[in-house]
Image (cartoon, rainbow, N blue to C red; front, side, top):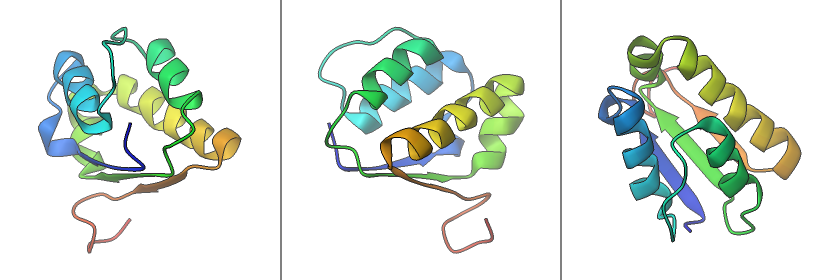
Length: 97
């Protein structure tokens, strides 16, 4: 798995595309379940991951509605419990957070 991952919200249109995209971006060595519990299990046990940057988070929120809030909460919990840097931008990286 990678040390740094960029998640582009414009690539996520629904839950199916979310998990396919995350699998690609994180370079998971094996298929994972398509739910937040499975994602948590893989990310929270990873020793390599140091930073996740999310751009266009507003698109994720628009497309996934409440599920996006749960996803962002998962990343924030990961930050608190595993000391992984999480940066979330609405828009591009050079735009406001």
